[in-house]
Amino acid sequence: MGRYVALLRGINVGGKNNVAMADLRETFELAGYDSVRTYIQSGNVIFETSKAQKGLEKHIEGALEQRFGLPLVVVVRSNDQLWSTVEDAPRGFGQKPDLYHSDAVFLKAPLTADRVMELVELREGVDQAWPGDGVVYFARLSAQRTRSKMSKLISKPEYKLMTIRSWSTTTKLLDLMDEA
Image (tube, rainbow, N blue to C red; front, side, top):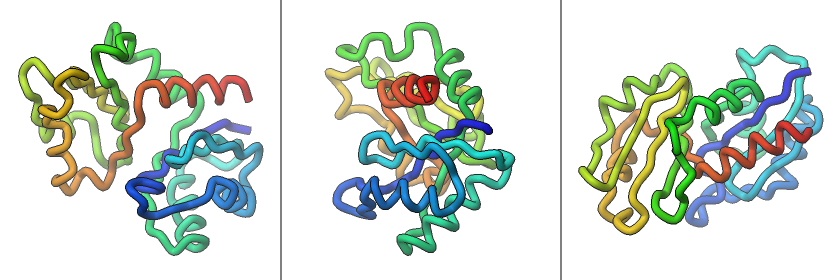
């Protein structure tokens, strides 16, 4: 059995695409996944399965669309992949939450970190970004976050293949996966 986290894009944000976590867990269970657990309202689902990782995203997206009538984008990471994301973060990333807002921008294939780095605009003295394996690490100076250019990614077509988690949520998800 492999342990995974499904990162759902665009649910329970700004009053749109509202999905109750109990309904989300039930949908995963009915789709054949085991040990299903959700974390906070933004669409983080930890689960186990004996199915191969390839195809999980498509299978979950289909189950969610059938249940909720929403064409949701899902990014799946194995326990090992999430561990690598945290371990491979730039030195000191996320360790000064009072100084920087730090996010992991998870990418759905075929989108790559190299492509996102071509698209992202950085404001000198405010924004920092680093490519990773299936992720872009993004930090912005908290005191000047309203000047950040990260929001310009929203206008790009590639944005539909990204889902963003705060660094604290990312590390908490890894802790929860390791506990299971």
